[in-house]
Amino acid sequence: MRASTITSYQERLNRVLIHIHQNLDEPLTIDRLAVVACLSPFHFHRIFSAHVGETVTGHVRRLRLERAATRIAFTGDSITDTALAVGYETPAAFARAFRERFGVSPSEFRSQQRTTIPSFAGNPTDMELRIMKPEMREIQETNVLFVRKTGAYNKAASPAWEALMGFAYKNRLMSDETEMIGIGHDDPAITVEENIRYDACITFTGEVKPEGEVGIQLISGGRYAVFLHKGAYAELKEVYRSIFAGWLTSSGCTLGERPVFEKYLNRDPRRTKPENLRTEIWIPVV
Image (tube, rainbow, N blue to C red):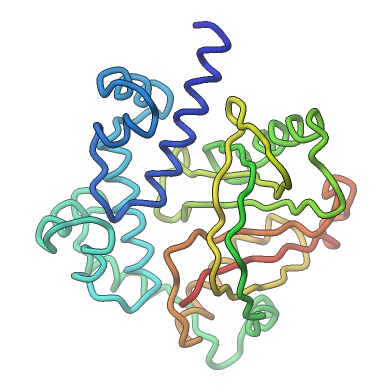
């Protein structure tokens, strides 16, 4: 396959993957997604499966169930509301699919998660003390350039940033105003490692044409709880657990459907000591 053909397919699939993520609560037929990709349904299905490693139907079903699992674990939404919010027409159909994916019913899954949720009551840990008071911010929607890689976050982030920064420097897109953003779409406790998605992103100005694996996506505007983490990236897993299982459940806030993202405040993390790294964690709330 020629390099130009591969590049074209990557651009088309980027559009489809973003469209799926932003419209999980709507009907996502192969015919509809083929239109987004500007391919025939037959060719689209084959190309999607070859590049993504899942069928279109299987990919959509998995993302819906994993989004539902996050809502069930970390919000007080009813099982019925959760089923409808992720695109299932009936709670019964959702319950069958959920049990097939996770091995337990939605209500059993919620009970299991609640038994592991830490509390800020009593003597909170040092990590909990540092994140108990986020700053609430409202932002406008923002277009960003991105490169997506899959796998464990500590393995996927580096090649994603390498590819994106190579494109950015080649096209002279970096400036003092450029923000570096990471989007970790999946909870490693819910999504198997090979399917975890990480997007390396940068803000940009002017017109930029997507190229190959470098695409454009929208970071949604709205209200966010912003936590500042000072320290190594390796500590972020513990930080997220404290935020979702501790702060969120006692804050009175409801988790929004927009992606969680990180802003990396150090201009050159590679030349910064781990203890001096500064990362903002943006949690969408309503």
